[in-house]
Structure formats: C-alpha cells, structure tokens
Image (tube, rainbow, N blue to C red; front, side, top):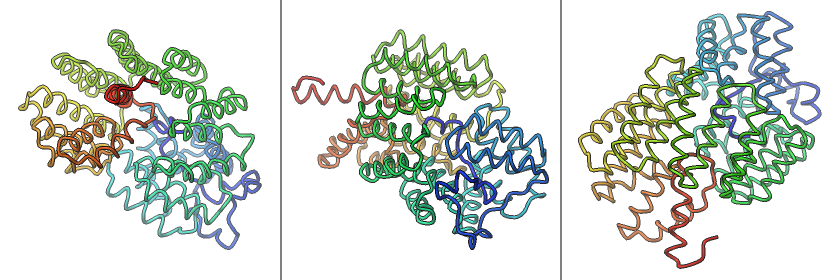
Length: 495
C-alpha cells in the first residue's frame, strides 16, 4: 500500500518484535546474530508487548492498529522513546506528530546510543534536517549490518526519497539475510517497479503473495504495481481480492485510483466516497476528497474542479490541517488558466501555511517550496519575470539550506521552467533532468529535447510520460492531454 506514505513514513522493530507468527514466515534471524539487532529500551513489560504487537501490525501494513498499539505502549511507559518516535512518523494528525517527536527528542539522552541514532534519523527527517538524519541512518546501518529489519527501514525510507537505486541495494541485502521476509520483499518490489523493472517487481509480488496469502496488503501492493505498469484490469482483480480478505483494510482507495487512471472518473468518485467510509482519521478523509477532486481535472471540468478543490481547502481549514489546505490552493493555481487568478490561489496557499496550524517543519518547508515552484512556473510562462526571479531567489536560498528531496527537485524544476520560458533549452535540460519523476518537468524536458533537436532523447521522455500511471495532481494535469496530443499528431483514433 503506497498511499499510506503520506502518513506512514517509517517504522522500526527489534529482536523483541520477532513474534511466533513472524517465525512461521521465516523472519527471525539466526540466534548468532541476535546481538546485532537494534535494541529496544522500555521499563514496562506491557509497553514492550504492545510495541511488539505494533510491529506485527506494521509488517502487515495495518497502520491504524499499529498506531493504537504504540499509543497504548507510550501510556504504559511515558519514557518509551522508540514508541514515541514511531507515533510521530505514523500519525496523520499534525499535533500528535509534533508532540511525539518533541517528546522523543527530549528523551534522547536517556536511551542507548543506537536508539539515539534512530531518534536523530527519524526526528531529523521530520524536522527537515536531512544531513544529520542521513548520517545517523548510515551510522545505524554500519553498526547493525545484519539487522534485516533495519535494512528494510532504510530501504523503505530511500524509496520514499525516490532514491530507488540505493533502496534496491539496501533491500536486496535485507532479503539476502532473510529470504522469506515479507516486509522487505514488498518494499523491494516497489523499488524495482518505480525503477521501471516490472519483471523483477512482479516476481517480488508473487513471492510476497505466496508468503502471506491470507493478508490483504500483498494483493494491494501487487495491484498498485500492476496499475503502475498500465495493467489496469489485473490491478483491479488484485485490489478486489484484498477487499474480499478485509473490506476495511483500505484497498477501496486503490480501486478508486485505478478507475481514475483508466479515465473512468465517475466510477472513481464513487469509489473514493466509499473508501472514505472506512477511514478513522478526518485528515485521511480530506486526502481522499483531494484525490477525488483530481478526477475533475482529468475530465478538464474547470468549474467542478474549482468547486471540489475549494471544498477541500475549507474542510482542511476546519480541521486545522494547513498542509492540505495549502495543497488544494496550490493545485488550483497549477490548473487555473488565468495567471492573475492563479497568483491569488498561491497567496491563499501561503496564508494557509502561515495561519498557525500545527505542522511539521518538513511538511511546512516542502509545501512552501512547492508553492514557490508553481509561482516561478506560472509567472515565467506569463512573462512576469520579476515575480518569477524573486520567487526563484527564495527557492534557491531554501535549496542551499536544506537537502530535502522535495526542496531540491522544486528548485531544479523552477530553474528549468524559467529557462524554458526564456527559450534557453540547453540550460533548462540538466535542471529538468533533476526532477525526472514530475510530469510537469517531464513535459518541459520533452519540449526542450524537441526544440534542441535531441529527438532520440525526446522519444524516451515521450514514452515515459505517456505511460505514467500515478494518481497525482500533476499526472492529472499533464498526462491525459499529452496522450491526446500524441494521438492527434499521429492521426490515429484515440483509445
């Protein structure tokens, strides 16, 4: 399940979390490696037991249940730092994220050195301090090279950062240590899939399903990778199997996303509405409403898209989620055809961030970078170069201070967009290549290659963009129309 990445960034366990069920799946390391596992420090046997159960739920990608266990573990032992840092990264509630992270950092001096590294890593990422966070992660990997669950954690984090090559190295090592470790196999499948190696990705998913045939997530993950490859009917079949095994697991969202990418937007909206019934968090409900709003963009229904996105912003404001409120306005700014109206939406997005809602530093800075990126792109396209240059200067300062992947790619995308508006194609290309996962940057890169006569490179980007199947706002804005333009140019009937 990949949509849960919005709230579910990371998790960790230890030797204590290797339960009898995990043993049946071959996930317990050899006893001679037991000392090489990251320890867990708690003074409460009940807290340890709850933490172990949370890890079991995490392996099954049961986020809500894992969070409940972790909250109870933290109540049983208020000084349980690992449990607190896990709540920070699992929770979709901004206030809970911030308070749990703060408390874990306060307890850092009371835990062992390895757990301090863990807190520095996860809290550093949460606070947008990526250099010390990555250093702490690397130190942990060096200290516990045979801890396959730590390898899984690192690999999962790298997948989140879209560093798929590095993720594959780490996850392959974890799977080598424990060939029947479902959680690492799942993540390795994703790393292969998002790298474009679908044969290996599907092979991992077959292994994952075979290891946990009665759990919903193997089918959910398989469905997502099949959808990514454009195999929509097969994806729906896997998602429905997941729903059959557990109607409340969350795979209705995968069905909705798949319909949306198939162009069946009305069916998608119905499925998003159904999926909302199964989530407990109001923040998740707002997220689902946001995804549903994207369906109107795919239909190019400007009136309904605006209504839906403004409704999302109001709902997000009502529950105090500044990030989602800002995102709704930012998406409107990307979609709005009139530059002046788009500029007003970007101001509204900034106001949403600055209203004083609880929000992590990483979420705040990443969204701020996204807003500046859109401002540069819209202003430069409208030839309002003073606005574009000013916004780019602010974004450049952010990029110099932070190694956040979102901030870095936003900066390069903005530079590329500005250079494209100035018809400086050779200069734009290397910057746009740095944002190679973004449909907006891919489209500009394709234009730059065509304009500069690099037709073989243009064809590679054209194929990637036309076959991009990810349920995001940028995909909705770019890919359907790009496909239609290719069909029109070829003089072929549109499928």
